[in-house]
Length: 79
Image 1: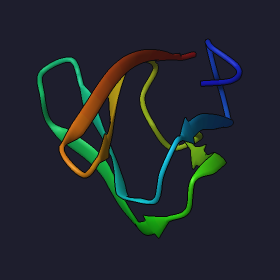
Image 2: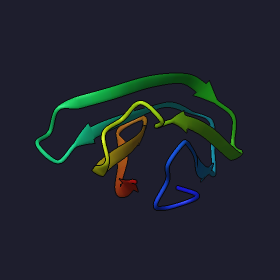
Image 3: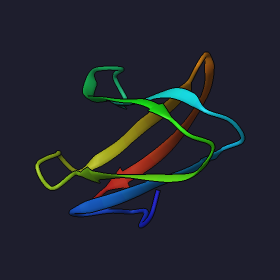
Image 4: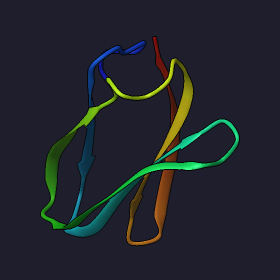
């Protein structure tokens, strides 16, 4: 995500080699779901999603990008 740490909005950028159904989940360190975004079927190529984190408490969060069973999780810090 860009920037990291973030204080207002952050971009999550990702690229896919083929069309897939995509979702993004954000959780706090206790595992509580903060936000979930179902992006639907996206074509192959580069994509980005903007997250508005201004209302979140300062701390570390994880976000998981899922695409038809493939998953990757990364951390972001909100200041």
